[in-house]
Image (cartoon, rainbow, N blue to C red; front, side, top):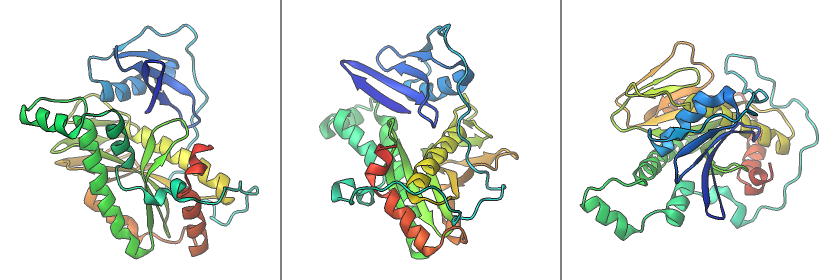
Length: 301
């Protein structure tokens, strides 16, 4: 999801990993416009997750067609090339400054910035809570808590030689919740907080309490494809990048038998990643981390 504001317009865009916009919605009118019919179902489900079920779909444009296939992420079951495979000369980055160092980010940093910029003041939130009034920002605070809880679990992996970054920005807007880098490779962590819910995850979609399908798995695979493209551009060697979906606070979590391209965990299960190894050498790990922590690498891509 990519927010966009300009001259009073407030929109949410749904983009493919290569930046192609397949749909967008006006936040004020809650009208969804489909640009690529091929992705109508997934885009509508994702936008309604943010705007509510009252969001309506604008009639499709006659120019709407199909988009180029989205870049794929290597399946965990497929043989992966060695991380030492030579590639083109890597693109150089400027010297890292404190302002560009993503290692300074805390879990939920991007959500917190959005709340600080556009959300209610602490007094307004306290007043709404006292009156038990729901707010459009409730889901943001729920998401923030989820990212913080998963962030604490990921930090435990540091004793096993892993490094973690939070709020990795995407050039076309939005961010990747967490990026885990270690001996076992690179993992993009997409956090979903559904307290007390029953969740089922399929190949591309998920259902929460049996509701409308939401493209959680598809979005996670798109994030991994984006991370792979950027890191290989600046590292100069092939990388194993896998998408991970972590659910926080759920009562039950079921996976489709065919779901093997995305790792699915509850928050306490991410510790299983600590035991993975054999994908990156210590030198490669440090190189990947040096690139990943540099904000300019992501904003230039």
